Image 1 (cartoon, rainbow, N blue to C red):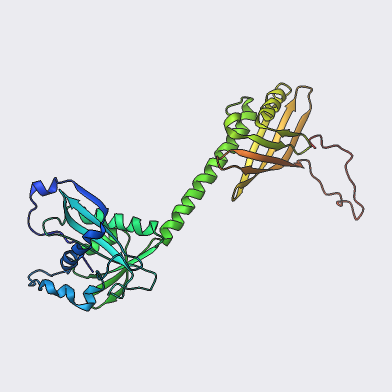
Image 2 (cartoon, rainbow, N blue to C red; image 1 turned 180 degrees about the horizontal axis):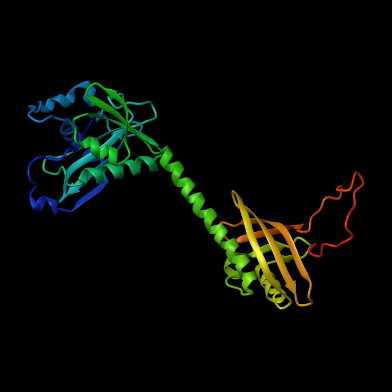
Amino acid sequence: MTDDHPASHQKDRVIKNLYTKIRKIHPDEYGLLREFLYQAIYLPEGTEPPSRSVVDLPELQVYIADFGTQPGDDCLVAETEGTVVGAAWSRIMEDCGHIDSSTPSLAISLLPGYRGLGIGTQLLNGLLLSLQENGYLRVSLSVQKENPALRLYERVGFQILEEKGTEYLMLRDITQAVRQENVDMKNAMEKQREDRIRQWFSMWLDGQDTGIVDLFAPDAVYIESWGPEYHGREKIKLWFDEWNTRGTVQRWDIRQYFHKENQTVVEWSFRCSMTDGMIQSFDGLSLIRWNEAGQICFLQEFGCNENRYDPYAQGKTPVFREEQALWF
């Protein structure tokens, strides 16, 4: 049951400029819901308002009877200059907007003169957020097809679930939104990790330390594919600085990333030249584990000779090259 349509008459500028506070309803204010339930009754243009005793009908009492004692009972009010001028509330009940026993139904209304000022949108968004924080990922409502408030509900994500005579049963399922939020967070985290890996590779290409202290955890472990193992961020920096006096990285190309939980695998190809004239070139993988601060706490490299061949190319007897892979 909802009614937040704009009043047809011109609003007084004083009312428009009033500060409105959206807050949780106080238990001693539950009695106000009787008036807001009455105001929530949608009246088409020219319809005579019913007696206020209409809210005593059993089909309407389900919205407010013993409010605060049933599952899904939640309510926000809009307060202006000490006066409560609007309310949005929910509960799990057998009303026109009922979906199932785990989905709260929603009602919202404003006092005449306070409609069409954006207060209803604030109330609705606030209540939806409160329900989400309380673990509810779906909320429903029933609205008359001719009620202009229908546009408000569509703007905040409600969708028509079913047509019931002159009314729509609407549902806002934020499960998809939560999933998308989780996907966005995951994508952002993976991008941050990839940026950090690229920073590490760029340090070697440039021969400049641009943030080893920030990139690695203090107790990080780094294992090269051919055996050397460095414990601690300071030892990793020592190795980096010392190695760059003996060689130059010519290429360290990233081919692809794989992410799972707190781990990343990056596939790459590498080439370097040493001051003694030796050239090393190979493909590899790095297995990286991250701590909660987004730093590398473990990195192990696995190498594969770039100069590969088929030892069975000449027949069933393998012919191996007599050469040493200097990188492991």
